[in-house]
Amino acid sequence: MENYSIVIFILAVMIGLSAIADKVKLPYPVLLIIAGIAVGFIPSIPHIELNPEIIFLIFLPPLLYDAAFNISFKTFKTNINTISTLAITLVFITASGIAVFAHYVIPGMTWPLAFVLGSILSATDAVAAMSITRGLGLSHNTNTILEGESLVNDASALVAYRFAVAAVTGTAFMFWSATLQFGILMAGGVLVGLVVGKILSFIIQRIHHNSMATISFMLLTPFVTYLVAEDLHVSGVIAVVMLGLSIARFSGKIFPDKLKQQSKSFWDVIIFLLNGLIFILIGLQFPFVIKSIESSLIWQYIGYAFAITIIALLLRMARVFLQKINLQHAFDKGKHKITEDALLDFKNSLIISWSGMRGIVSLAIAIGLPVTLADGRPFPERNAIIFISVVVVLFTLIGQGLTLPWLVKRLRSKDSPVSL
Image (cartoon, rainbow, N blue to C red; front, top):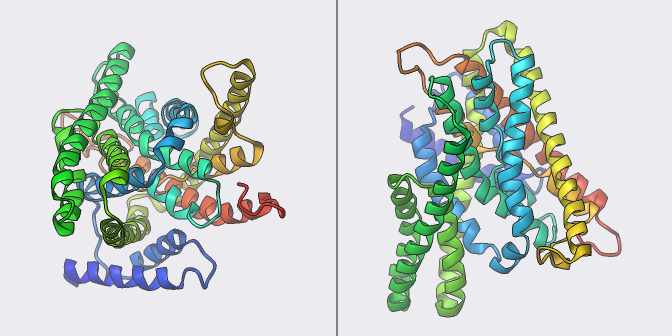
């Protein structure tokens, strides 16, 4: 089949499976991943290669923008302490924990290669978190923490990944330089997002009566923002998130109800199609990635991936519950302006811990590993890193995705069904 025929076929499968997801009592992302794996094993289906640049440009900007646009800025600000802890501190803790395991357990994993693997799998995925937790009746605070973390942590993971790959290729690593560059990437992304947001607000304020032009501008701007930020060598992810947050605050004051409804309907279709394609593509990668590994090593590498999944989950649980204790202590002492709304209870802490699914960003940066080093030699253990990364993504999405609804139901109080 031609490539366009394959895309149409995948879209038809995606829409059909999404329609029956509720009837089979499976989260639709999990169902789509399983379908993608099955489709990938069909002999006549050619390999669809994921281009990381396409993933970051076509998929990330609209999905991040939509999530940031719909998030409550007030609740985001209330929980900024927890969100920043999970999106920055936990990312580097997870990358380090996975790196230690990989270096001492997986043959051939030098420290730089181990940190490459750790950085690939260090961040949770915004698309996965929102798709699987939607409809579970979680509290507004919990949803905002999960979405806020997933929106910001991609930038942290990408910085860690760049420095880890640089170390593999022989570039010297200096902590002060890495810290400075991380600060510049984050601050620059914030600045670009705010500036473009101001420009878009200025334009929309004058054309908002023309609904088609307004919606078109809002569709185009996330892509422009991402490209401008990346061209300036700052974080495109953070820029798009800040754009969404700033426009969300502005839209409540200026958008008429008719425009809000039209915009929401349009974006709902776009996000539905992009979400579905992402999960199908994740599943499609497994049958082709498995062919790059010697058959005698497949189960061994799957075992490594399972162990890494458990390590990442335990580190996440430890950090979330430590944050719960720290918030309570700060609140009791009256420090850091911690309000009662920002506190975490046991149930919310457990749900947040269990919601750390990996997804398309981890997959894209894994597949985007350089094929060769600067001197022309093959990138060491590239196939192993990609295979383990894909399997960890599948373990988190399928394993945690299937068990999270069950966990929420078990924790939900009979007297207050939406207390979580």
